Length: 132
Image (cartoon, rainbow, N blue to C red):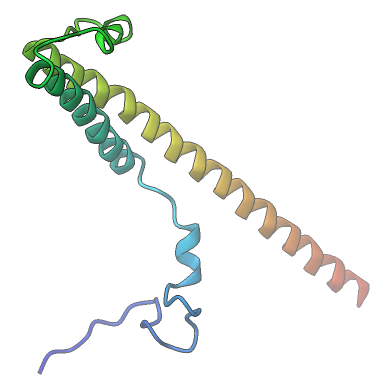
């Protein structure tokens, strides 16, 4: 007979869950900065690699529309080595963007929660002092 480990979170479908079945406090969970950075970085790197590979295979290496990426990505060119360099720079640029976006979201959410808790504590203190 297997046992279910006890957790602090209620089970799905219990009376404290909202209609969607998710615990409401999960909305305030911080985003993992490195995970979001890696996910967006892989998407960006693969996109640059795929566009470069498409131009090399399907269009016979016609670099007209995408050669401007070399203005932004050092060492990039429309070639197979350039596709790998583009993957690297696409990964790096979107990793930084994703990490910073998660950092800002966590900062804004933490500030909002701090202000909300502080206001509630001040309200409770005023209520207490009114009864004295």
